[in-house]
Length: 118
Image (tube, rainbow, N blue to C red; front, side, top):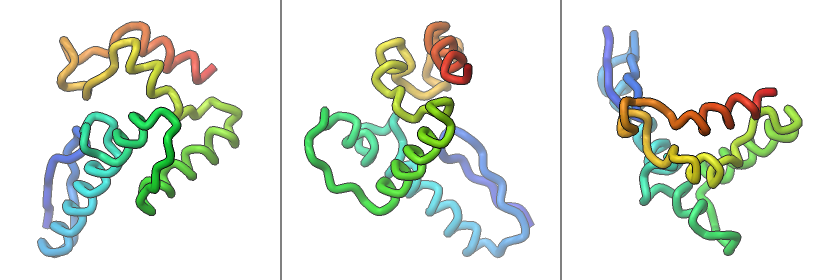
């Protein structure tokens, strides 16, 4: 038994679950995307990114995501860096991959992402 759906710019395949359970998985993925996508202007993450330091009361999902991302940023001494939003936005990665010309990241964004790994 297989169930497929598209969310977060990828195809998800759910196996060996009854259809109602697979639909719950799909709904949860949509909720995650609606909350944490930087490409949806209505997402909670987009709202947080646009606050410029003003106070914001996040949902538990966003709070846990940012807390976990911060933890791994510190644990890896910045190799994992979830705080590049403004940098990569300025370099042209301001929309999802499939909407970029020729489905390619601007060269500067790819280089910036590579440099964060060094």
